[in-house]
Image 1 (cartoon, helix red, strand yellow):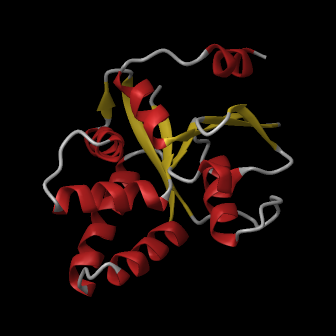
Image 2 (tube, rainbow, N blue to C red):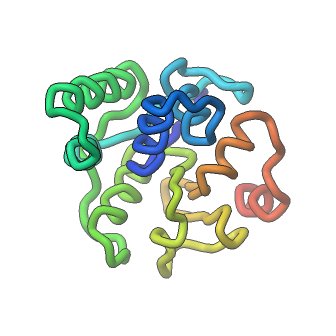
Length: 176
């Protein structure tokens, strides 16, 4: 069974900009490369993403001086990765208690798509009454009737994907 990752838009943007600047080995690139290949040192990887997230990413790419045609091509590549994997959801349902609509949509997409991990540069944006801080600025957890979702900072998720062990607090959350 693949690890199902929902990558926040800031992770995609970080990877795309790193590639544009010809940087290698960044945390964002590690995560995106795993999604592209469908594999990591941890095993198979699959993408969970929504059309709403892809449309927002297109807007952000254009703001970062990508042309419309280039932004469209990148979005189609990402959509294809999700189509080959388990989930390209329509999005969430707008009921989670996060103030930011975009962050709420990303979290709901991760939950609706059965993601194992939502990865973001802005972990604090996902703090809410249903989200538990496991390790400040690195790991959060959400438990629903459908299961558990880890919310990880990009650096922590990339380190885990490269083979580092999960911290004891995160393991304890998953084992409860």
